[in-house]
Each structure stands twice: as C-alpha cells, then as structure tokens.
Length: 81
Image (cartoon, rainbow, N blue to C red):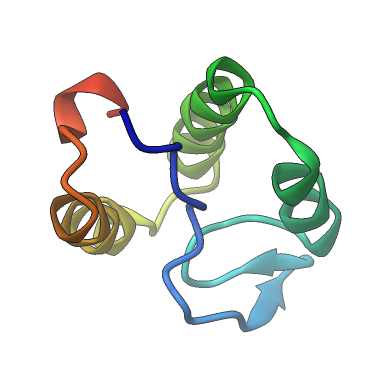
C-alpha cells in the first residue's frame, strides 16, 4: 500500500492564527509530517488534523480536495478519513 500522502492541498497561506487556510496545518506541523516515516504515524497525523479542522471550523473544502489526492494516488479514502 502506498504511503499516506501529506494532508497539504497546495494552498499554503498561513493566515488563521498561523494555520494554513487550505489544510489547517501550521508550519511546524508541516515539518513534523515530513519527518514521519511510519505510515501508522502519518495516518494518525491525518486523524489528528481532521479533529483540528473540526475544532477550528471552515475546512469543509479540505476533505474534498484530499479525497481527490487519494484517488490520484490509488489510496482508499475510507482507510484514512
């Protein structure tokens, strides 16, 4: 199975108190994700990020964009989201 892709959806504008308006990651979280080597850790990170998005609000667009990314990489979205 391919590695869990980054939650980044290529918006990368950090306006909401340091959170990207596209994916909700902070710059530190983006760096952290890149350092995660085990897929279980990457999967857990995505789960944490979806919880963060719910808490922050206004990130409903992210899931649609991330699902498209998963389809392109032939990864079942149900395993991650």
